[in-house]
Length: 274
Ligand SMILES: Nc1nc2c(ncn2[C@@H]2O[C@H](COP(=O)(O)OP(=O)(O)OP(=O)(O)O)[C@@H](O)[C@H]2O)c(=O)[nH]1
Ligand SMILES: [Mg+2]
Ligand SMILES: [Zn+2]
Image (tube, rainbow, N blue to C red; front, side):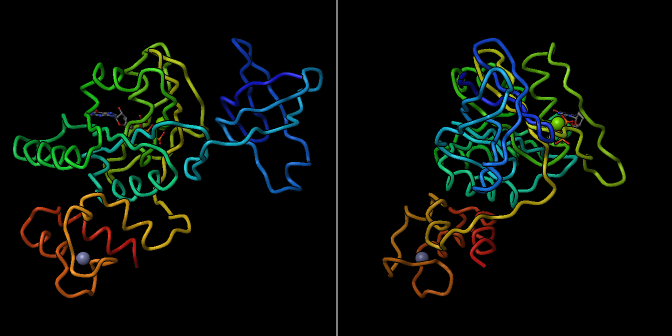
């Protein structure tokens, strides 16, 4: 019996890494019966002879999209152009991974495509999210990013075409990951990366993943979603358990008016609660 980590999955083949050796394994029917599917990131036990996965160790956490387990950080690859910046998708990912007990780190890409004015706007945005306690970078700050991620297990997430694979190629050009052109007509990518795979580069265990075009939420209570909006708790509302929607004398709504809380954050919050 051997124990290792699933580092890649293509259809029904799970590649398990044990020290520096790779084994292509299959999952047996017993997992299907118990509604348990192995995930990239899982620690598993398998028999060396037949390469059947026999046991999946308990997970620290797991994500659905991209499907992966046992990560420390989700690096939210967020393009500012092509595809255009979507604060809706960014906030949704922050809320989602936070609820999954994964630390979000934000990385804006394609800032070279912004004009001067737009760059200023992005700087403000960066400051706002940093003010919430998040680490925020651009893909031009590679050494800073790598310094923070050292020793961590990191999943890259983001829209298709946002630049996840390109980012990893920047970290380590020898990976030569396939990247896709952005269609000028649609301004978005076309799902170039088709599977999730881990790469150990520069002392970080990175997972490249297929991008998404839309994102669903898991089943969370309104309160749980509210509490991922860290800035809201700074302001004392009249009602202790204020949802900041219909309540009177809501301090959060006032701070939105004053511009201390980003309007997009508040609007996205209202949208998620709906
Ligand atoms: N101008 C500019 N283009 C970039 C940057 N990063 C990535 N790109 C381009 O964006 C396109 C899409 O990049 P990919 O790395 O394939 O995107 P992805 O997120 O891996 O996409 P999927 O695999 O489909 O999820 C490619 O044409 C890249 O060359 C950047 O910082 N600036
Ligand atoms: Mg890719
Ligand atoms: Zn309130």
